[in-house]
Image (cartoon, rainbow, N blue to C red):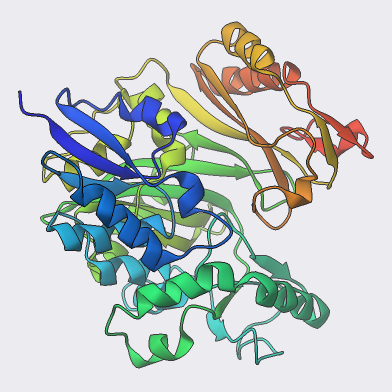
Amino acid sequence: MTSRNVFVLGLDEQNLATLRDVDMPDLRLHPLLSVEELQGDEIDLPALLDKATEQVETFDDTVDAIVGYWDFPTSSMVPMLCQRFGLRSADLEAVVKCEHKYWSRLEQSKVIEDYPAFGLVDPFEETSPPEGLDYPFWVKPVKSFSSELAFKVCDENEFADALAEIRDGIHRIGDPFEFVLNQLDLPPEIEAAGGNACLAEAEITGAQLTVEGYNDGTDIHIYGVVDSAPYAGSSSFLRYEYPSTLSEDMIARACDASRKVIRQMGLESVAFNIEFFADPVREELALLEVNPRHSQSHARLFELVDGTPNHQCMIRLALGLDPALPRGEGPYEHAAKWFLRRFDDAYVRQVPSAADIERVEEHVSDSWVTILVDEGVQLSAAAPQDSYSYELANIFIGAHSEQELHEKYEQCVAGLPFEFDEQDASGMAHGGTP
């Protein structure tokens, strides 16, 4: 059997475990650059492209695909590298239409009505909101990830403070994104905006969900809908849960809007995920964000419920094959990725040891724990996260019921001994329980 050699940008241990469960016995996975190189403090995109190109060129066998599951710059690098090597991928312009938040909104507005009021903001020149937007609203860079530098502002003082913080950090992602924009023949309004602008948009509320699917060039397929549940009174995620618990009608509306938007973007040969807010009481739906990649955070959820991680979609599309994703063939009816967070800054005195994690995973069946902070650091100095919390750990769990899903999570948290200086236990949030 001839092997298929697939290079994965930013291949990490956690995703390697689920990638190995993709239904392709002839698959050979090869790391291409590290996560640290791709998501460092400075992103020198031309240098990263050259380094990746050299690594692929010196490979002593055939190269069948180059893929990635991370946000920018990985999501933009995949089509750029595939073009260099004549490999199958989405078109770079279609990817950037999704990634540039303002351009994406303009494209969405041509085919759907389910989106919030929005406007462009120059963080270096403007001091007032765009016309037609009232407080409260959100302001965020046109390109960022993990809700970095995204702020809800309720008055002019908060707007000014948000812009000041954005100005201080926007160039980290905005400058390399400018490099990508320069590879394209842009519409005048996008060329004028560039990569260091901001999107302001009206606040939207409701239950958050994510539609996952792909366009194989002949049709747009939806293979799953995942709920994103926040902490009470916060925009920070508590868990991703699959399958969605929303009504069939609301899910159908989100799937229909997704198909229209993906068709408008021209996004093909790659998986996508689109985030929505749904208000079942008012029967309202609002599209939040279009991502030209599948969600690696959901991979284990799909495996636990359907029997195969959604990575399979990414791999097989890149090889020109039918993704062939199963439904309901996993060992559980429910699965979730939980985010253990702290909402106050603190010095990390102790994190769970490898032995602590092993005990938890042995005691709570089909649970996986990843610690995201180190001992001896200040949380505010750790890796960038969202603007309102500090992520301590990720916990994946499979369960046969909603109740079991929550019980297993509480058992996991109870077995993970974090200790912080200068804060009491009420500073740690896990499922709303101090």
